[in-house]
Length: 327
Image (cartoon, rainbow, N blue to C red; front, side, top):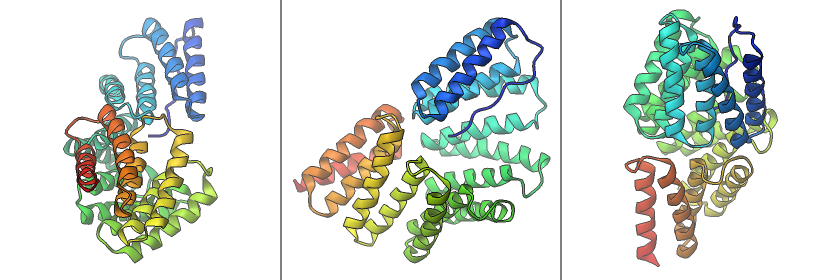
């Protein structure tokens, strides 16, 4: 989950307050560099000062909790992330009108974390709250409306409700095509998501067409090691795996893993996705020892990052059992 929020214009002008804002800026700089450990350290030092110099329901405390939560989310530490963004929402609900955009943003952040840990009904509830506020306060073609539609699509996609997912993804794409430059990375994200739905419903030609549109934009608009490219490479790899092109699939999965190894903590759940995908290809190729090694790496990461009942843990455990029977 990218992005951080800025502090309000506040009456607090003490040296301690200014020090806290300096820590926030350092945290933001480290976050933008992908150095999450240092980002957390500085954000939390800033929060500690703000807790001493501001009232407990001050909006700047909500901003601080929010930014800490976003970094924990980027690190794949979802329980800590959820705790922080929920504290931010609690403060905002005390201090802002019920339709304030920051409250919508907090609901969005909470929804995205619930989606990642497999709590889909809670994720939908949070995203619906964000969408309701945005529908009441924003023009129908506002980028935040597209973001809400996209987030709803992600949850339905993860639930396997592909027609609903496609409906929301297409709503997001319609807004983005009208309001963004043709090479904007968010257009590519929409193309990638729609391609993923078509791949899941076995319409492989349509899927490949959308993935190719996404890839062209990402390669132009983003650094070559951006995590969004890793996600797209994994999706293209899955498509080739489903059509039996195992060497092509392996090539894309390895591209994804290479990016993740450069940009993410070694125990991030996205790394587990790539390890598991590589394991699946080796299993399909009959290289069961290699497959087992990659699946076990994936399981080790997921068990540390996700609730034990998460479907991804179940899926990897099943893959390990299949491979062990074939060894």
